[in-house]
Amino acid sequence: MEKILVLDFGGQYNQLIARRVRDHRVYAEILPYTTPLDEIRKQHYKGIIFTGGPNSVFDMSSPHYTKEILGIGVPVLGICYGCQLIAWMAGGEVKTAPVSEYGKIELKAKPSPLFENVPESSVVWMSHTDYIASPPEGFEIIGTTPDCPCAAMQNRAKGIYAVQFHPEVTHSEYGDKVLYNFLYNVCGCKGEWVMDSFIEDTVKRLKEQIGDKNVILGLSGGVDSSVAAALLSRAVGKQLTCVFVDQGLMRKDEGDFVEKTFTSMFDMNFVRVNCAEHFLNALKGVCEPEEKRRIIGTEFFNVFWDEIRKQSDRGFFAQGTIYPDCIESGKGDADVIKTHHNRVKTPEDVEFLGIIEPLAELFKDEVRRVGERLGIPRELVWRQPFPGPGLGVRIIGEVTAEKIEILQNADAILRDEMAKNGYERNLAQFFCVLPGVKTVGVMGDHRTYEYLVAIRAVTTDDFMTADWAKIPYDILATVSNRITNECRGVNRVVYDITSKPPGTVEWE
Ligand code: XMP
Image (cartoon, rainbow, N blue to C red; front, side, top):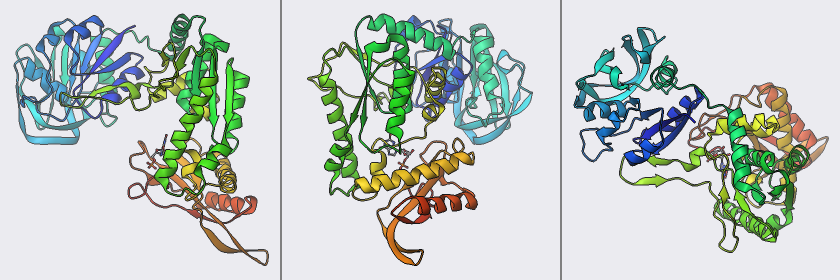
């Protein structure tokens, strides 16, 4: 398989670079700058991209790499810090720039394989305080900006290219073209990375690896474990057992939907563990949010592993780990930070033949595409984020069966109205919260004293910050009418108009 290496020098856009490369149908993987050259050589990469990073190349404690990498016959593209690093390694001059450039800047490009179909003048995204004062011998300048005399350079004979700007961000008008040109004009890629071939290859590999043994997968109903389940089902059918722990804190009918989907559409053994009672007992009298989260998390795994212990012939353990969970990042210092946060630890007394992670090479959007191709319903593949502790953190204070039912009904109405009005895929997240507060109201001629429901809806790209969504009043009015009319026990609805920060998306 043709592969591009994204060599990570600690920049913030490194995953984005790999995703953009994959969007051009070329597989890209990210490795930290501490990866030895011998290992890189062995992989026969079609090309290497040096990422950006926050450091200065002339600071000797900054991440560097042996300059031999420029002579192994593999094309290299340096971006931002990576561009300066190439200049520095090859004997050019890098200095602190008299004027730092930040934001959108006009690039003047000269003819180059890297700039095919890129106009002579275009907008690029810059973010740098150092610059290349003079390029190394053998390099020619192919791009300039008003404050950067060498905004792009090339050594065509050696296949080495470098750009001071960030082609991976959408603010760079022709950035995508630049990456495409590097992949196809410089590295000679063919574009073989497509999801259909991923499915075919992975199914074949899984069949070989698993043979006639069994596999167990913990299915949460989330996107990653669902897609992993569908892939494994295609590979080994009934040798797969999916264990679905329903703690009674999912959205209305969601547990039934997950069960129906996987039992009717896919060939596998499906074990549903209904343990709502168990969770309600464990949560009795508990109001503190962190304590609730801790109990739900601990009990979830207690129930899950108890169920797994009952399976006599366990074979392999499969997980829906995806690529961002596996990346070792070069953070700009010698310590390599591992972020294997989504991997589940197996208890010592539960043995498996090995761990299988069929999605460990994919980004989230690729996982969704694979899921669609495998026939998983769209509402599951495009599911909004849903917290692990489920409705347990959307009911403020003590969780009771009555409150769960009220919240599930109100939330189902909100989702129904949002779907009818075309908001289902256009908003990052929306849901109802039950603050556990009762207020006075009037219905018919009677005084009521019932629960308040809050609606939360946000727009966001990354969930680190978020804005409250400006849902039209008439939709909110319909939702409010329906909730107060159709949900027994609710007499008031409010809309949360807090952004993040200072609020968070969830209320607990
Ligand atoms: P906050 O409330 O932190 O939420 O602004 C940001 C995003 O994370 C989701 N979220 C969780 N997801 N387990 C999860 O898998 C959790 O415990 C959890 N808590 C919050 C939240 O729904 C939002 O999308």
